[in-house]
Amino acid sequence: MSEKLRILTEASGSLTSGYLIKAIQEAGHAAVASDIDSQCFGRYLADDFISMPRANDPKLWEKIESLMKAHSVDVVIPSLDETLLGWAERRERFAELGIHVVTSDFDSVAICQDKWETYKFFQRIGIDTPKSSLSQDFPLVKPRLGRGAVGVVVTDKPVAMEGMISQELLQGTEFTVDIFCDQSAKPVYIVPRRREGVKDGKSTGGVVEANDLIVAAVERICAATPFRGPVNFQCFVAADGGVKLLEINPRIAGGMALGFAATENWVGLIVSNIISGKPVQPVAVRYGMKMRRYYAEVFIP
Image: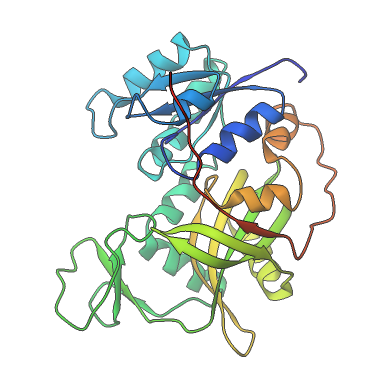
């Protein structure tokens, strides 16, 4: 597919969303930013902008469908946890309208968005993961449905556990794994990156490191449930080298800028493989590549 596509990205006011707008443009396509904040910085970096309704709007999907048509959107790359399941549920509906939604199947997304279901899934397929409970049996308490560091506490004081999960605290080095799964759900890129800085749950720095145990765990998970397009895993590597998986984010993520830089522009892969069905010819992963982030300004006359 050689024509210039109009590609939507969500949450374009996020401090890590600028790289995706740039990646869309560098792949030769038009970036359509969107956010509930009509004056977010992404509006001024992108080629077009959509002011989105809030996720709790009772007519959310009716409005989104209307906006997609009005702005002639060709492709959607979901990045917002609050709407991810909705996009997956409506993927076929949007396909009928000629809009490609790049997301995994509904069942896969549903497992990954609920941390308790993720825990049970890992246990079922034999993936090492932190001990977890729906009671306050462990010091780390977090929402079952949540993202980043929002609502996460480490405490020995009583916590209302409705909608929460507790987990054992892990010792070791935190890794994020950027994965690109092709049209047939095969992981063609598995890029482990050691996190060297985190702010509000987002990576501010990292380095790409080879790890055979991480790669093996990712391949096992992807064989057990299908993913499509960009996926993001969180794990810890213990001092003895053991790997424990924590979470799966079946969507593009803010820190994937490093995954792109260490391989190639995944927006191009989305268009050529996921949408057009062309095979992926993977390049060698650039192990040792580092990322550091900084604030930048957008000036509006």
